[in-house]
Image 1: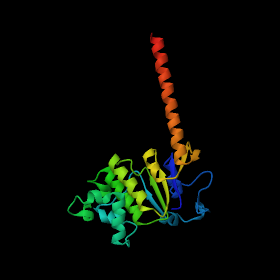
Image 2 (image 1 turned 180 degrees about the vertical axis):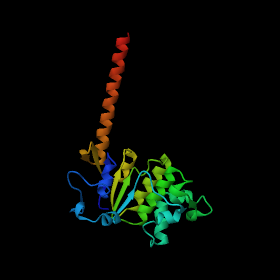
Image 3 (image 1 turned 120 degrees about the horizontal axis):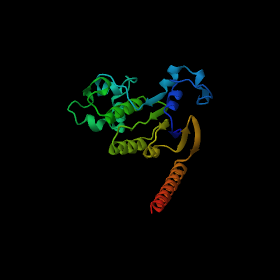
Image 4 (image 1 turned 180 degrees about the horizontal axis):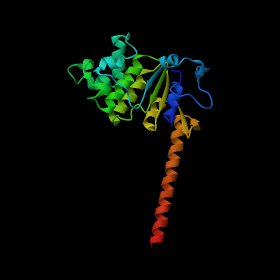
Length: 219
């Protein structure tokens, strides 16, 4: 495992890393090489990207998982599907991974579409995994299972998670907080959660004081 980082902030960060956007100021480095010096195709070939709104084609679940990795072994594909949670719903169908879905995943829930997108990224075995709100459409149980399986899979990759969900912090060891295009905080998961809890407690205290003051005025 090279590094596991969570970025609490803007989805634009992911688009900059994958060269979908070009920075107007500053620099982005991958393995100490400025991305501007790298071919966009080379950058994206080495990044497994999972977006909030997965792009799926009309075809079987298997075909969607293997997009970009047509030569992946059956064993590797099945392992990726198990880790991502695709097997959980595919096995409920008599067709399994051969189950046909419509354009953009018609017939599946949002969480199931995200699971397929995650399996697609995993099956490529890229050196960088970039997950942008990967569980935004999943229920709590599916998300918890995904987190547990990813932790057990011992990913040999740099994992970048862009999210506002604190539950996904279980996957990372460092947190970057981005606000208005700037990194306003950086540190361990423990330090981030501690600061968040203190901020929440402070906010509750102020709310309680406000309620007391409001009642005093009413009286």
